[in-house]
Image (cartoon, rainbow, N blue to C red; front, side, top):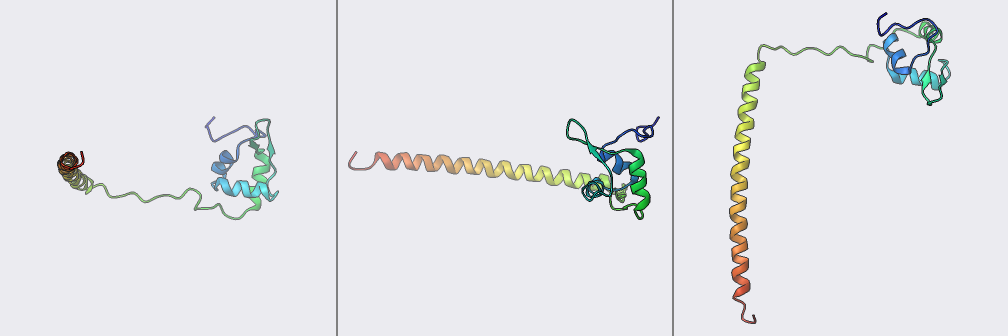
Length: 126
């Protein structure tokens, strides 16, 4: 038996029912809320839907929602290696620039601390 198949009369979750009927889980939940689809809650407060009730509801509905699980277009893979090389080069350049900026920041911090210490020692009232 395949994972998507269940024996007749076996209760299922809204997510499983949505996968079987190729609709969104939200559509199943709206149908339950509107009392269009019969469902009960189990002891753990999870919705359970009988397969016959699901079939009756699905037969009463119009065509399945194509937007529930859209098929995404695939990208051409021929230029991926060159794009990857460009991205890696940009990453390396950004790392070098970051290191340079951090070194510069540290130098400025040292200079500021030295100036602050010098200035405090030279105050006439100390």
